[in-house]
Length: 560
Image 1 (cartoon, rainbow, N blue to C red):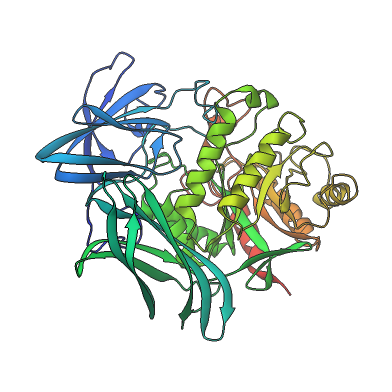
Image 2 (cartoon, rainbow, N blue to C red):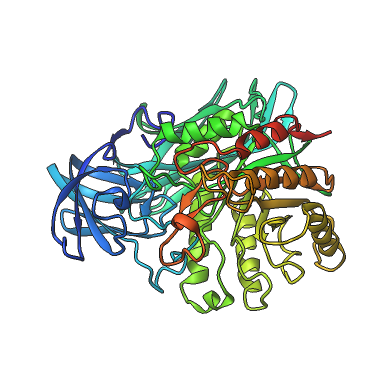
C-alpha cells in the first residue's frame, strides 16, 4: 500500500511490497546466507541482524513487458537497483521516494535486486551516528507500473484564493516522453465538478513538459483542522480518442500566510499544540504499517494535539495522507540533526541536503496538512561557515514552493547568526531538564534577544522542542529525574508557562514516543533510547500523558 487512495485506474500498477523477498547480507559471518523477509521492513528487526551496519541485498521477481516504471517510497540508506543484472537506478537518502524507467523489457519473468547500505561513511553526509536509529532495509513501499511511450509524471495543485463557492488554484501537470521522437497527446484534467482539456500537447524526445493553468474549482470546500476536506485530481492522456495513461493525486484548498508573530491558515492565527515524532517502533523499526501510524495519530488527537513535527526527516507519504484526512498540521523537514560546521567541508553535504529538499517538496507538495518546511535541526547556525548553507537551502525551498513558510530549529542560544533568514524563528529549549531555569524565564530571554539582538525581527516565534525524560514504570516518592513523576511535573510547568506566553505561537513536545538511538552515539541515554516520549516505545502511556491531555485539550487551535 503506497498511498491511502488509488492513484491509477488506467495505468497498470503492481505492488512489490506486501510480499516476501530474498534477503542476503554481504558482510559478516552470515554473508551470502539467504532468508525470506517481508518488504517493507528494516533488517534490524530480523533475528541476528539487530546491529548489522553494512551492505545487503534484496531480491524478487516480477512479470512484465515493454516499458516499466519502478517506484520506491524509501530505501535506507543508499540504494542501487538492478533489473536482470543491469543497474537502472542509484539513490541516496532513506526518507525520500525515487523512481526509474526501464524500457523495452521482453515478455516474461524478470529479476530485481536492490543493494542497500546503511553504513556510516563520508560519502553519506547526512547518515551519521545520531540521537535516533539509522535503520537499514527497504523501509517503505515498492511498486512497478507498465507505461507507454509517454506518461504522466506528476501533478501539483497550488491554492491561490477562496472565492464565492469555490477556490482559484494553479494546476501544473508534468508529462514525460521516454522515446526518441516527438509525442503529441491530449490532456484531460478533472477535480470535483470542474474539468478541462488541453488538445495537441507536444512533448520533445526524451523530455518532460510542464502544462500549467489557473483554474476556478466551483463547489470545493476549504481544508482546515476542523474540516479536512480533500479532493482527488485526475489527469489522463488521450490519443485518438482513447485514454492511454492516468494519474490521480489528492489535495485540499487552504492558504498559509505569515504575519507579525503568527502563521495564518485561511486567515486564522494557528496555535500549535504539537509533538515531535520519529518513525520508530520495536517491532517494525522505521517501517511502520499503516495501522501503527493511525494508532499514533489517534493518541496524538486524544491528547489534544493538532500538529506533528517529522523529526528529523521526511515521513512516509501514507502518514502524511492520514494527517491530511485527520486535519493534523505537519512541520516536515529534510534529513539532518545537529552537527559541527566541519560538515560543510564535506563535498557531499550541501548537495545531499538540497537533493532531499527537492525530492521532499516535489513528492509531498499537494499535502494540505504540511504548513511549513524545516531544515537543519540544531545545526551550526552560529557559524559563518554554515550560513551559506542556510541561505542556499532557504532559497531552494522558496523557489520550489513559495506558498509555505520555512524555518529551522535552533539551540544556539544568543549565538545564532541566521535568524534573519527563515520566515519563522524556532527554538529548542529544555528548562527544568538540561537547564536550571524556568520555561517562562527561558522563553522571555530568547524572545527578547531574537528581536533586539538576534536580527529575527517580528517574525512568528515557535518552540520546536521542549520536554523531559522518564523511564516507563520507574516511579519513586523522590520524584527524581527519569521518574515518571518528575517528567509529569516538568511537563506541567513547561507547557503552562510556554502556553501563557502570548508572543509565542505554540510548541512541539519532545517527543511523542521513546525511540532507539544509534549505539555508536548513545552518550548518556539509558536503555540506548531517547526516553523523553510521552508514551514509551510500545506506546504505553506514562504519567505525563494525562498532564498533556489536560493542558492541550482546553487550549484552542487558534489565537482569537
